[in-house]
Length: 323
Image 1 (cartoon, one colour):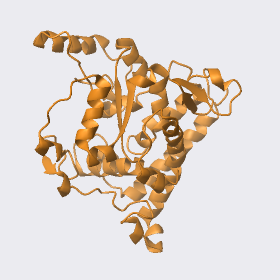
Image 2 (spheres, rainbow, N blue to C red; image 1 turned 120 degrees about the horizontal axis):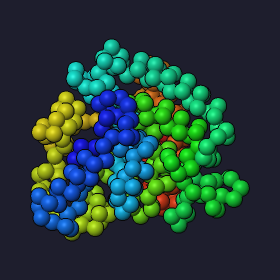
Image 3 (cartoon, rainbow, N blue to C red; image 1 turned 60 degrees about the vertical axis):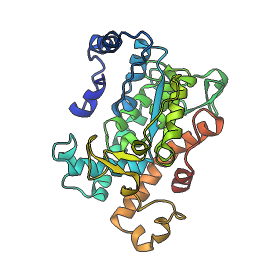
Image 4 (tube, helix red, strand yellow; image 1 turned 30 degrees about the vertical axis):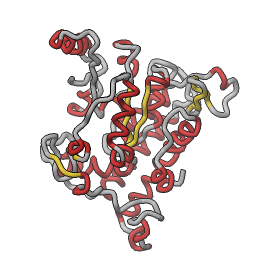
């Protein structure tokens, strides 16, 4: 199903007034074509998560919708996206990155994000909604940490208490496809504000790589589906990987190596090889800057994980980012 927010990817802007009729008709057509009233109709898109109006729209379309979020190590996601867009001449961001190295792009884009955030923070506490710290969640209710009367404070989302400064902050990230889309907490809270926590499942790509069948079982359980039989060969197959950007281009998992094996954790195999020279290289400085940028956002995910609201962060993330 084509996403109502795909316009963000291909046209560079979020069009929250896209046709809803097309969306609901498409969903109904799937059931009519198969003569099934018990059919679950799904939609997927990388653009749903950072589209600030989408959780509210999805709730209006279907308040019982089940949300599944697949998160990747923030810097690995950013580097992968950069390499993809740089290698594909037809890609929507190719012109932005074609003359950059990852280091020069990070320097330029982070300066833009920093200036955007500096403008957004000026509006904190002015008008509209709440600009309180990211909430902690207890028993399905969002609770802001260190705020008087926090026990009754709810997670803030777009159209559900999100303050002007927070909305502007989210825009700083959503308009930065490569770096900003790796900021997860502000967008996850937006979904938490609109959907019960038991309708949101957070997964990590490390889990998918290590145990694809186990992850599929978790997805089936979240959706209330009967366990299906899966082809073992396909479970060990990787699609749409670096140098093979297509859904009809398959590789075995052991044939794919991460571009981010330049890795971040000092105790990782790649990290153990990091020398002072590497750390002072343009790439090393770019990675260090991104670690500092993403760390506070990951700290919020750690708190939610410790509460059992979401699955705990992979240990490799916590080591790499010092959270």
